[in-house]
Image 1: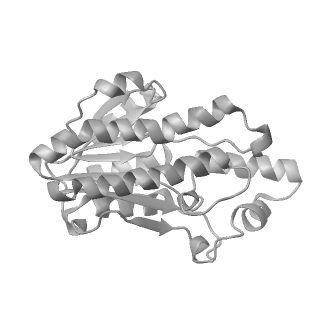
Image 2: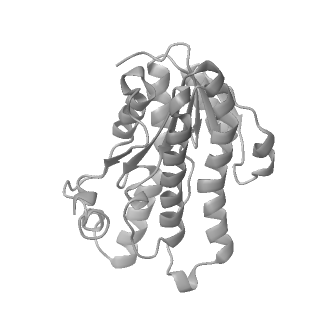
Length: 248
């Protein structure tokens, strides 16, 4: 894989989980990484380990992002949240919050990064979507809507950026082994009175042909390839890493 020395990468939600794995993979390949996260202390800790920078930022505060000027070469839109509830019980404010963080903020960050990328004739936009960007699940209306919108934003960015050396792609994992998902497994096991293995098999992984969680490092490996020169002809794509979920 081509190295990323001399490239600067910004990873949102980069202090933990998928974001931390992606930031680490990019740094290992030579990129200077900026860890953007609501948890400034965690961002600073990882940035120090990777020789990068930390940006403590609340991406729900979108007004400052409208005048932002980013000089990054690689932008990884990863930050996200989840809420599970039926539509008729879904709080409108929570729905709007999820769209702001997972659609509006990525749009504004892409908008802020493109001028620099266009000027140098090279750029990589990598959007952490989900299998829910191409499939739906009950009780996840806000999340599914946001991921479908992110898919559209990524494709439009790919078309507009093509003449400027900028690619834009989505990564679409199934359930990834993160602290958030592991807490969900434990909560569901307690609620249903079943083991955590049964939660995985009967609840979370029913649609996946490969019955295990995706590892953050697996997602990070794909992100690092998409950021490389080897992926220069890959744009407007959505790469599933869902253990066969979307093959059904």
